[in-house]
Length: 331
Length: 309
Image (cartoon, rainbow over the protein chains, first blue to last red):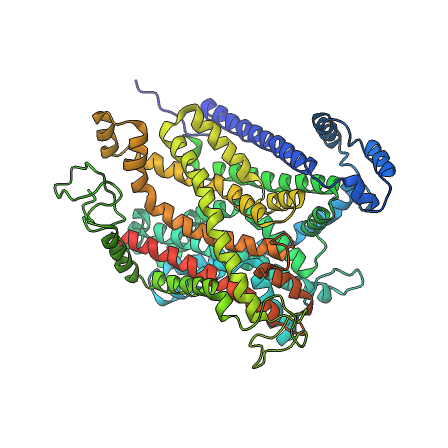
């Protein structure tokens, strides 16, 4: 007698498979964070500019610089410093910023919140718009609407975020005067004021990836529309809109969605550029300033936090894909 | 069977079972000389509208890069009469905050971008392609290690790595080129590997192996020519990315050190004066965008041509 394999998730094999997958992914993430922490630390430790000297200035006497080095623990061997740093990190102590003389943790968390807000809002605009445009293009493949959308996407993909930011500032701030060109959040601002300040950065962030997302969605949608089951449904007489809404969309969205989630690294670069361009006080700008000022502790701590955000987003995306796509689960 | 003897982008092998035996090995199938090869390339390119527009844009900027010393009306670093002058007959794009002619700076800045971007990508390919080839063809432990390494490096936000490296060692042309090449290596390795995995199951590879060809022969003359199509498309797009990155680094203040004119740096410097004289930033922004658009159009065109085969 042939034993039927149950396809319910309660099957022990499948459950073990899932567990194995989760452990594998989380393990990879931990390994990645470890390697990256080493990379970050050793690159920063190679800094030819002495952090103690940067803190005290060019004209401080060598003796006080040496004393500060000793106090900061900079004269110990690199490996010892690394282990020290990591163990502090794991306990939640990110060290103190050389420039601000405040705990890195406080500085980073405030800025992180702002950056995440900006990124989330950007996503909120980009994803629906990109998916929608790509869908429309995919459904109308070959026709004029598709060509227009494809051409515009190609252009948007090629324009880097700082360039599009400049164009938008010139159009909306300089020529039209509708929106401010700088985005320092002010607690005294009314809601309208602060929203106006955020519109341009969000637009730039969204434009950065919309082209890419629209393209991927278009390809995916076009493929899905050609597939057999859609053709069957059409031949059965089901109205096209219903087909799209109930069947096509779901399948077409998987590929672009996963592509975007895995594209997070590029997006972080975009966030940094946007923050610098609009003077938005987020984590990206903090890190850049820290790097330029050689504030090693702040730079390392902040970079690690940002990388952690990127890596965990990818992890969540990976897990999401796994659960969304039954085919992968049963490999 | 891929039997289009006149295509340069279809699969071929020196010893394929194609009855139409032509001269040449896997790379130069069907041509009698490099000139004929070039001519065939050009005739194929012209067929695609995107490719033609793309190539025109690229050639335009390449020309400006080469001719910069001759066609620039002024020196890019010399101070002129007035600061932040609007576009006028003497200065077609105006002057910047240090009274330098914007157009001349734009032209000279082209050299930096047009030279550094391809070099960085080429370096990335030189290092990444062999890794991908080996990883895909040899497989096994080597493959796992290389892929793990590539994955880990890919999880790191690229711009952050660049910021880290450049601020640690100090901005210079060499560091920018090295950083961008290092950043391109993991994706190139991955793409190469997946292409090789695809190709290595083909019959002509098995045939070569049965003949007793050495590994390097197979890699170089059987596999490599047949992955070159997609690689070329990817390279073109990657040069576009490199240009955007160079611009972004310049914009963040981490690019080529002054006074060398650098498009990203120009945007950064001119940012504060955008309301007085937007052309200091508009000109380089438009230039950068157009160049990347050109490259992407070319890549699209090449892809179109390859698909038509």
